[in-house]
Length: 313
Image (cartoon, rainbow, N blue to C red; front, side, top):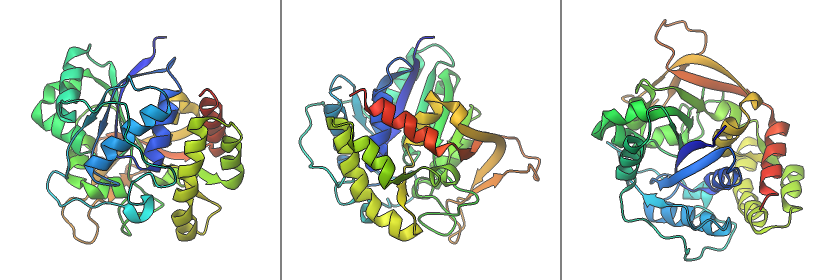
């Protein structure tokens, strides 16, 4: 089979960075049409730089990177430097990347690229707030028929929220965008905290990556070592959850995940529960099942895949 055509929409963030490495390592399965960035974990000028840095580290400065929306559709931007550090990728040295920033806006790139492709042939992989994707849909709904699937890191059900008691960070930052995307009518797979909290970067798993002894593995270990310090204290766990690479792992090895078709709705009004994802796991509402909800994962298999792919560098 030819590789699957993808656009990665991200806000790097250490875990977004590892997701980029995993995708770049898998050219036989994934053809990266471009990387788009959005404000989220850190402001836009940092996320676009960080994405370009990862291309440099992976020796793929031929991948096109585009900067997108610098704030949510209706709210002020909320960021997460207290988790990711001021750079978003604390744990490695920041440098001026050789990979150029493209002049086109990310939303324009998404629209133009989708319309130029055959119907149902491009997979969108958002690992940050959904602002770019929702803006593209609102600007030109015709793009939707060209989308094969949207594979998203976001949301939570049994795990509760990681930024508020109710909301996972990506959805909280732009709940109105999430509401648009979840109801766009295209196939959606949602990998939320219920699975990402199962893929903990324990010392043993990080040491395996470090033993690969290449520049990408070294960068991964550096970033995870910093990322580790906040979440291990927060969750009293032996490692930090590695959220965003679950999207790429799902495309590469869907058998690692257990999923269920559910209706997922986003709270866009309540001050108390803004950004909450109401996952109708047992179909009690009778509403259309709009999302393929991931609820379990083979964590050892996930890290076996990640380690094997990072060894390729």
